[in-house]
Image (cartoon, rainbow, N blue to C red; front, side):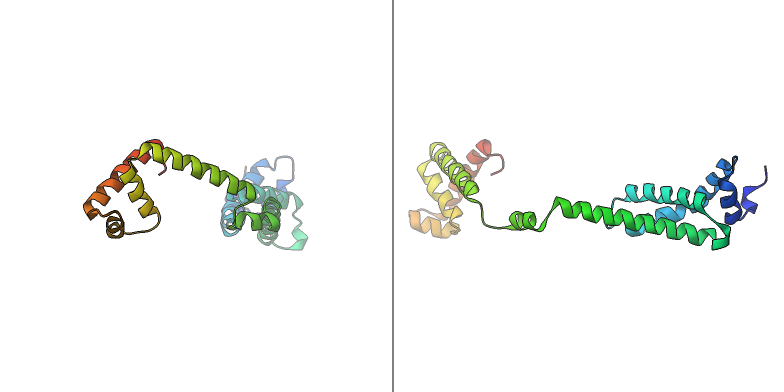
Length: 186
């Protein structure tokens, strides 16, 4: 068999569809796989890279089988075939994404206001957590923690409770430790 590196892309593509063209096709694929990977990298911001490479290789195989010498160079034809297929892949990915998240769904996802159902659940969870906190914490720890929740400084809490700042700090630390044991995300 002749040295394939001496043959032009056009000669390989023309022989690619013949009976023993498997070797010729493999040579063309090895020559143009870099182009496929490069183009996939360019389009990857809008679609899955692996899907782009797969479709690009499929387009390259199509270009080998559909190439006609009279139309020009193989490299130009292959580049157009690969690019067009990847653009189609990107379009499909965009349509898939658009189907998954319609505008109305997006509005409900980004809506900062909870639904009535969520309000009931939040109220129930808050009530349950409040009862557990009352059972778990001492009155001083509970009052200090409530002050922290309200955004008061330790000095302000100490003043309201007629205690010193260190007492408030210790009570908050004990309360947090107790609550972390029951509520790991606290």
